Length: 501
Image (cartoon, rainbow, N blue to C red; front, side, top):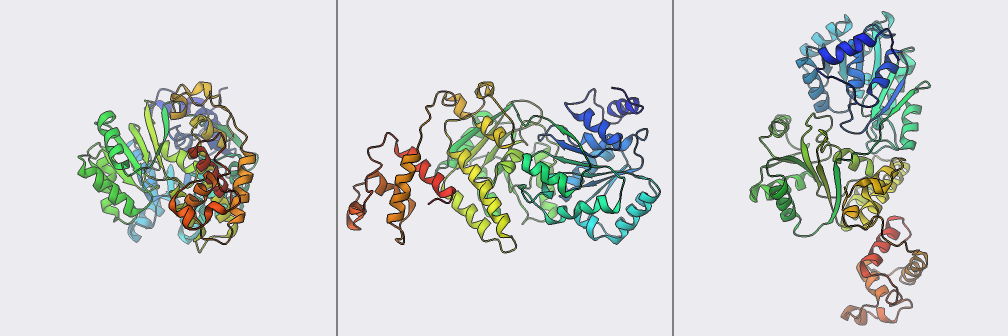
């Protein structure tokens, strides 16, 4: 369907963004916001979300006119996007806490005069800056505000993987600026999070635009985390990705430093990136990596959000992600150019305990939020422990998207080894009941899970005899089962994750 603004949209696409065509769903989102409608955009990382609001900001022939306000969570993300827009001679600026008063006043002056096409701000600025609020009200009264854009909109939802309280207060946009359309965009939101975002932002009967979450060019793999992990990383990188860029996501700042040093010692150009480094160092590392002079960045999870580097060939998780939404977003930074890329997660059950402790020890978190985060962690555990079902199907199922494992094309470790469609299903309810009965009989005793498994499997180790575990009812009850020790361990892990044990 053609609209009065369609020619201007095509002109902006070719002459301002140097593109020949749209990706799936982009034009639908662009037309919706140019009609002046609220819009919810769900696209995977690399799907082209930014164009859905950057291009309409240049079109004045629609039902909206004036400046587009983009609310974004990270300074680095805003800086990267504004830099790329300015290179295209697009009138874009950002306001954040790093600007001097003189710089901020200069930008506010041209913004208040309606001379900007896009202004990027943090949610904190929307809530706390009197100067920004006054300028917004002036533009609103002059009918020079075209739309509000809430990027990384999953931050609005307490059910999302990266909830930020300042985002939740963005409901004031609807209250204080009636009639101004809102566009919310995210790459990671299941049905519950989507509904929460729309409710919290007070979206009015929004046009919902969704791409498939499937990234067919990504190969998903889970490996056991052993003492040889660093050596495995080095072998993967040197044998398959000698001249390619990659990211290693790490558990902590210290882990970033340690992994980077270990890989460097093995001849790989690896460098740490985390919040403990000063801004100048972080910027240098990011630029050196983006231009290919550094091969690998060892980073905490914030790295890579919004960075325009399409040729990342591998993403490695040195430890568990806290949730599948975060995992999907982080792995999504690989292969944005559509070429084959690899996503490897090193898994050790012991890492679950570390993350569980981090969640439960948060002093500024509510009980409800902690329970939600623990629930997310259980999904991660299930994904890692599942060595039979298609990885792609598991991830897409979490996002409420149906997927036939036959269509994976052997693009995950389980499908590649043929287990995804050929494994027999076993009802383990009776076994689980025996495990629970055994644990109840040991209540109050300082027994580790390893010991509990040994008791269940009827181990004849010296400790079993020394502490009398061989006389406990239920000792050896798992020995006669048709399940191997690895399957029994997975069952124990699952019961712990579900707070049954």
